[in-house]
Length: 418
Image 1 (cartoon, rainbow, N blue to C red):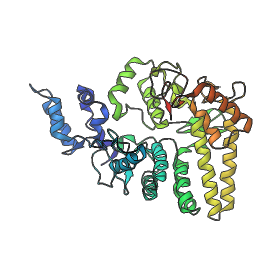
Image 2: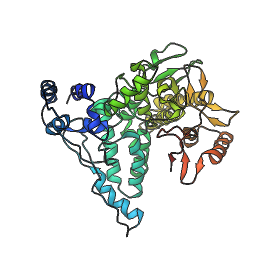
Image 3: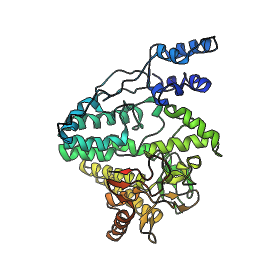
Image 4: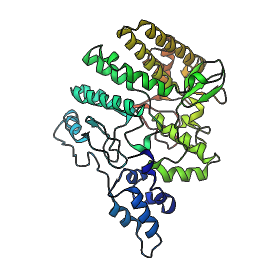
């Protein structure tokens, strides 16, 4: 299905707020059309003003509701948590299937989150793979890496999820970590085997970077900072409401002082971050209406891209291309220095996101500050300072808070990472 075709039915949203029929807007865009969308839209335009027209009946007669994966699963309380998880993998495994509705088909089996989420999600999948590895299901890990390689080869990048309405954005670039996970099982030759895809993903994130002026400019995912360094931000190529959250986005635009197109891009970019939504992205930390995602250089994103640069450099070395390997390693070192320069706050002993439009660090603390520790960017002294702050302020019974702000947003206190 062409990318634009799934949006042709959107007069249903705009005229009568179809999304109110379902538990959320995502249900509708995941439905399977029984007839070509153009034909269905024509019927809707003809019938919607007729006496007695029932929108819900119309939708259900022209679309099949999406399958809820794992809905039939029931935990066996006589078994351990681990035994139940082993069983649950089978319920959450989606087999390759043909193109249907908004789904982008994948050639190999994969794990979905379940319930209303019947597609694969990019960064979630890395953590899923860690679970699969612990369960000894390495072939499924291999299949999922192959699916992401397929998306890079066919689309040019890994979208947020394998739905056409997610095209235009990716998610935190964990592909190099996935390949590294597989290399730990299959051997070091795994890295050069995936070199082409690693470089394609890097090109996606660095699109337009070389053409940026000397200082204080941005394009797509790339930002040239005041000192001439290049770091990255979250971005989406589109400036329209998200189809999977159409009504919520439109209503927020009515409340916000921002131009709708600007607001929609900030919302979409936050969805790319995976932290949708969090006070990390707000000008006023209490208000989603002030979201400004594309104006922020996130510390975690740039640590992930540094790891990607290192992985490409290592893959080139293993492939017998030492000069290319050294080039990427030098790029990674420059990024490391820039992260330290713009994101480290010595006075507060913590890493922060950087607001490049206003030329200053964001005030709010978030768990993204641990990424420089994970990737060995922080010095021992810096790591000790961050760890102390994490223990003192973030650590609660059950896990770590995402941020220290209580805003009602999903990625703020009291919610956290286990």
